[in-house]
Each structure stands twice: as C-alpha cells, then as structure tokens.
Image (cartoon, rainbow, N blue to C red; front, side):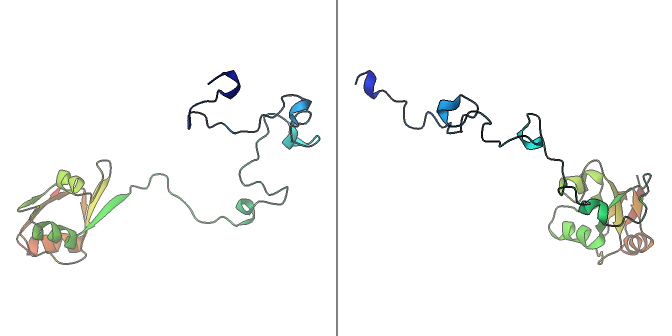
Length: 150
C-alpha cells in the first residue's frame, strides 16, 4: 500500500452529487447547469404549489360550494354489534365505559363517543358514552342493560 493507491473503505463514502458552481474546469461552472436568466436560475427560487405556468390553476377553476360549520361537534360512532362482539370475545362482561372503547380502538381518547343502533345487542350491559341514539338506548334497555351519559 502506498499513496498512489489509497482509497476509502468500501461503503464509507456515498456522496455522488454533481458539484455545481465550482469553476469552469469542472464543466459545471458558469451558469451551473441552470441555463441563462429567468426565475429558475436564481437562488431562492421555489415553484408555487399548484402553479400551472400562469394558466388558472385547477384549485381556482373548480367551483366552491357548501358550508362548513366551525362549531360542529364530531362524535365517533360505535354500533351495538361492536359491543356485542366485545362480549362474544370475552373482553367485556358487564360494563362498557370510555376506557374500554379506547383500549379496543373503537375510539381515541380525544374523541366524543356516540352509541348507534346498528346490529343487535343480546348481552346485559351498563354502557357509558357521550351520546346515544334513541334506537340504541331502547335496545340496551330492552336487553336489561343501563345507559349512562358522560
């Protein structure tokens, strides 16, 4: 081994970028492969998101309609058949509260939960949630269960 055949260890170097603007001798000096003039040749240039070369962008061509209520309160819906599934799988015996729903990924800890009347419930359960539909409340009470509002 001598100075004429030294090279870095295999895999230790991996920068194969073109070194732009490092003199004419490199072949990438002068305009540094950016061409002449125009916005794209300048430093700090960034293409605007959705820019279509001056044509009216799609985002502005498409009509907007409707209304979004900023005060809307979103609830995560949980159907009765999901509760019955928890009972069938032996996860729940008598009480379904918010922590049970979160641990079984039926809701996240920041969401409000609304029990919906989809499916049927055979088990006698004490169900705690933020809201209930009328059909869900009737079905839980018909099965001998109890409804608790949080």
